[in-house]
Image (cartoon, rainbow, N blue to C red):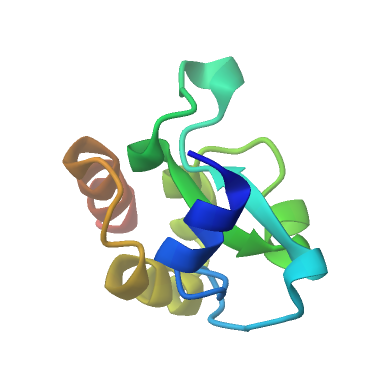
Length: 96
């Protein structure tokens, strides 16, 4: 999936915080980082602002969002095209 297609799919807004910065400040984030086995498929990619992507770092989204309830709620509402297993991992980590 091309960056422009991903940004358009996600409404040119960060799925973590909801901000809509200029496109040059948007980045592609891997919900499950490649180093943890994630891939470049559309079900593992989301639009993130640079600040959220930097704050998340190399963590898996479920590990980071477990401690970020507002961002988690926004993510679950707006990242509707991620793989169901990733959504389940986020919900499970939040319940611990």
